[in-house]
Length: 179
Length: 268
Image (cartoon, rainbow over all chains, first blue to last red):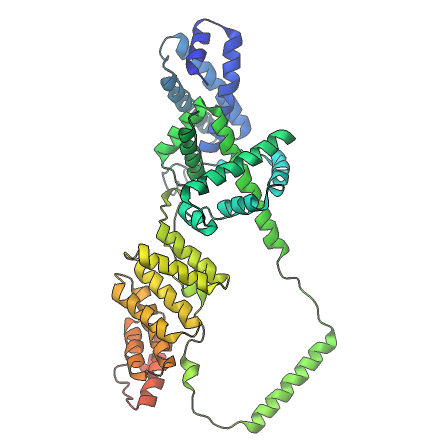
């Protein structure tokens, strides 16, 4: 995604290009909020929408124009939007002080799509036997370094990575066909 | 996208899923996703593949759980009658016998005694080394009954990653496998090597002394065994009670009974 195109579209009031670009940015912001802030889909959609409006205003004012700065600005704004929403809609209970002050862990499981899961399982089942065995071993032993997986299958570390990417590509291809 | 860059980014995605990226690395990765949303699709796909595989594995575990089969009632009556008959026979032929040394020995060392990677408190703190992974794989091989594979893995740790704590852990684990295989001579060497290498770990030292003592008794080297078991007792750890009982038996057999040093009222 080329953010300079988005900046140009905003400055030139090219609504068609702006909407096209927004369609690409919005899902990224939604997933960012769901994974990194543990936001619900509904809250994430609202915050992503607000973030885009704030970012467009900022571009119009000429405050942000560099693509990298725009990306950072949008993530920071999305985070702040969500935190503001979160703190105003939920009353804090001071009787139960938090046990720690660290950031909560990322909620990658929020990316799990139950509807896709059935198709995905079918695609995993239809993999070649050695591909299937390999990817099952890979994800069932997340604590193992790649060198250990490589040794288990009697291949080099580079080949272990290559094989993993090949299996993922094969699954993706299968899934794309089914969707 | 350049092939090597794509591989690098996909490796980062893998590390993200496994929880081994720092906060800054995660944010950098999200900045990359913003520029190249197709990489976010890969992340999403891999998270889903992982979830699907975990779900299937869980299903298999649940379906392979033991099923309860009810025996007919008459079998319980038959079993009870058999037990009564055996007790009666044992009472009839019971004679006082001296204690057997085997009663005080460890017959099989449990897999729970095997040393693995240290515990990890949070996924983000995860910094597991190759040696840790090899130790964990060795444990898995033991659990699967593949002792020769376990020995191979521990030998790799000894050969390539022998710095502490890995060297002493690998030797201890090797000793445990050899002990369970009945190769007491090799087990003794492994436990002695553990004791030479171990640094700042009372747990490993205590295990090594205790199993060394047991292996030496199995080899009939009772005096050396007595010394090793005494060292176990002195460590005042989890093997203190069995060590005391074995020491008592060894002292009786060797005719060196002197319990003055032991607090036998607490232990016996």
